[in-house]
Length: 163
Image (cartoon, rainbow, N blue to C red; front, side, top):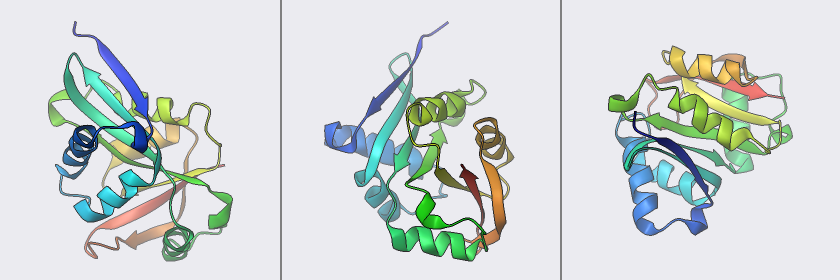
């Protein structure tokens, strides 16, 4: 069996090539606007890279979202939780289809949440039941109602919070 590893870095400690590889994997599925993702990556507290052998198989990050973004997300979701209670957002969890089924999203999530504040939020597409299950395994619960994504009004998202 090929060895798996999770590597954590700050955005500042990543080379431009590493940030580009992260961005490429995140935007590969077409669910994230590349310009939004690039800004989110640059503002991230930590980036996580999952490798299977030498192949980049998955990525995720713990973002430090702007208050204006948090306020919009929590308002659109009609959340009863206060957005300022959450300092970080788990996001851009993406696993290369060739490596799905290895629980890499759980391994990435675990690495990022280990030692972080318990008050983290995440958003996930309504139909992404696999990610919903991962979030619930790590103590997130769905909050509020489904809402339209800022960059694609046809795409509906759920807000998840971990308190």
